[in-house]
Amino acid sequence: MDYVGSESTDKIGCIFCDFAAAENDEENLVISRGRYSFVIMNRYPYSVGHILIAPYRHTANLVSLSDEEKLEIFSLSQQCVSVLQETMNADGFNIGMNLGRVAGAGIDTHLHLHVVPRWNGDINFMSVTSETKVLPEALRVTRRKILDEWKLWSAT
Image (cartoon, rainbow, N blue to C red; front, top):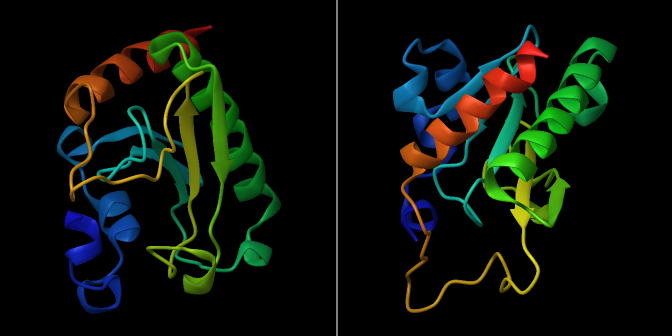
């Protein structure tokens, strides 16, 4: 509900561009930086371990992505799946983009790919009850687990 009630991104700038330009990856929950895109924890996750991948270049147009950007985003999504399977014991994933406000994009000015871990028997990952969402651990704890596994995966 914090996200829904917050100011429009049109009024405050682009958070993806801001996080990409910032140097404090721990504070900003950045997991990894590639040449064309970066991986970041979602501050308002649908479920624990919810990761976003965004290009550095500010664009809302999927068709405008270069071949290099597309390849890196897809490669990073594969690594996210592998790392989340290992750290979160995920049984499955929702992976996708909401392009445009009408399609459900909360931030429609900078495209980003969602990687959402799922488990057998979990409830609808979009549900909110009494304006409360329960996550089993703090975002920074989850980030540390994912980052540790990310480094192991990258070393192989």
